[in-house]
Length: 236
Length: 236
DNA sequence: AGGTACGAAATCGTATACGAAACATATTGA
DNA sequence: TCAATATGTTTCGTATACGATTTCGTACCT
Image (tube, rainbow over all chains, first blue to last red; front, side):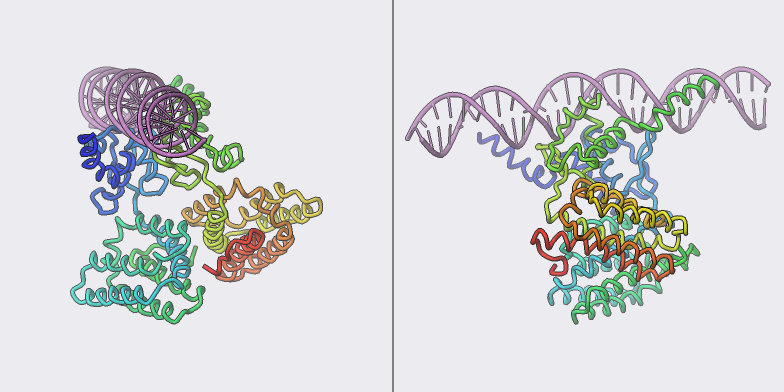
């Protein structure tokens, strides 16, 4: 009994936080994709990952399936899985989708955002402004996510919130370099953040907030597009 | 070469339509959920499905994982999978999400909708109007999907289109009964369809079309909610 | 020399087998 | 009689094994 209890207590911590191996694999692979260990195009060999994680291929396969359904990995029958690419077209699609769902999430979230949240967001934005001087794109992008998280995390509709998270995840691999490409955009971004905060603070109607949030993202996308000479969204 | 070609041609038909067993299982289970063979709450026992389909549990597991990621099935560790419920709350969330993504998809699709599409949609809507007399909720709902499909299928952003499809799939099990609950809504629905068509026809701006499409769906949701005395969306 | 065909290695796809967890049921003690 | 525990059955979770497919390198033929 004692040894069982001890064992389960020791393993318990791992078990509870980790869940099944399938889940562990899912978390692990996802984390590596998001943090950039597995860069886009990276080939996810089942056996290699299984060996690396210390368990067999079956849980790994299931994890890959889930990641596939989320669009983080591309899967080809009898060939294998690769980390989903972020070619300009994909980037465009993802950003556009995110502009829509994040806009909606922010609008739905707005009535539930309290003073404390606003203050936190404003603090983050201040850091971003500070960050502009000795510009660090990676740090800036991280703060950017923090900022927006505060605004949309209260969204009462879990489905929409989930879509927003998936969008951010898809962009994660590229994200750290977005502002590197369009450094000029960073300034405007900070200003738009403040404007967005004011809208929420003053209890602007949902439609106004949604449009503002959507445009804020579209503008980043457009800035990126004009850099890379790809087509405009409106043109579509 | 010849025999290879012949072989691949012969097997090709099976292969192309069927894909891997994992894929087959995915399609099969999904189909059964959508068509209502597996009703919400139905318990998806791996071994049973595997035996039924004629292969082992491994492909079935992977299929379930994908369906889980899509939200069609709910999965509980060491307990099993069940067809995702359609409790009022879930219905509300899904409809709201769909109103947003379908609205966006319709707006993005609008410029690409040709006269032929309009005509087809109008024909479907005429059938719906006809259908109102000897009211058949199931048929009506099917036509409703056909109608909207015409409007959003041209959406150039595959991600958004995918989200719309997922939304419709999630509602599929409940769908056939929505208009049974709120028959009065059917009349308005047909009228709104015509209004929507006119907007697209006359080249209304994207924002107007998006709002109209979104409201069209929200209205159905609100009608449903007022029947079932659940909370209103705006309240959230 | 260039291209094609063959073959080996790598990798995926699926089946089977066994261990673990959860649920239902029976049994025992108060 | 009721509650608590023990037992059995169902079902899931994972490992291992083997067959199938693709890919790449090499040798051979033109």
